[in-house]
Image (cartoon, rainbow, N blue to C red; front, side, top):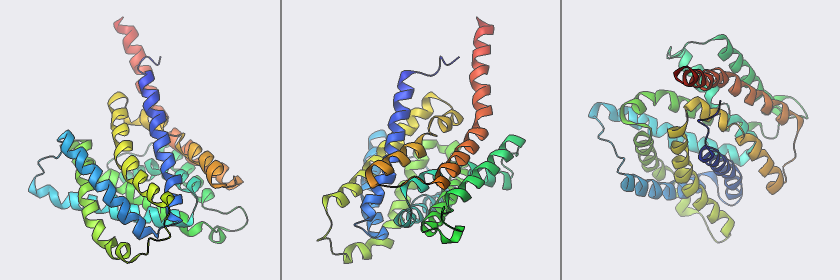
Length: 310
């Protein structure tokens, strides 16, 4: 049944989950010593240098047609300055567990946008997935001690949620470029252009800041997120995509919010509240509900086909 599921795939999945989930924790630590704009400046700078090295080493810069440059610029703005600044400002005022569960709903928001643009038809199980995940998002963003707007993390959750919507839009609107130029070249172009556009916006706060109080924890978080999240996580992600289908990757990476919550409780002393547990389960249920039918068809379809040929 799972002959396609090799040990190397499990290793890559575990590595990707650890890289991404640790990013939430490390970012939160860094934001304790840096304002979001300053943290973003240094992270973008480190990430840009790493991405340039990867692009040069892998020779993955595509020959972009002149007519496609405007779309690339729009995608770059969405992927880096807009998405990342919303994420960083959100992380300043919320918890890693909240952010990880909200980002777990990216596929749901991408599905909603695809349906609105008529790229994809909404089937009953996808509608059910949207309902489950959106309910989960509301529950996660709701404090257990009062109404939604009275949650101490409400502002941060809303900023992170806005970043999730932007990332989902980037994913959907970037699909034609991915199909035309390939996933890795498209990503490299967007990251490089986006970083070059975002760095000037954050240069003045970064130059004006007094760094005398910044410890190695702060600088370490900048280097870690710039290198490990921007470079290593992307390489592992594309290695996974070469081995399994995108829908299967979505299923394999659903442990991310659970691991992020566990790390946040262990390392940051976060307390586990009922709204996070219930909302998180709803979000994950929505993702699984949306992807499980495709995973089932591919997995059992391959098995049946193999037995028939045998």
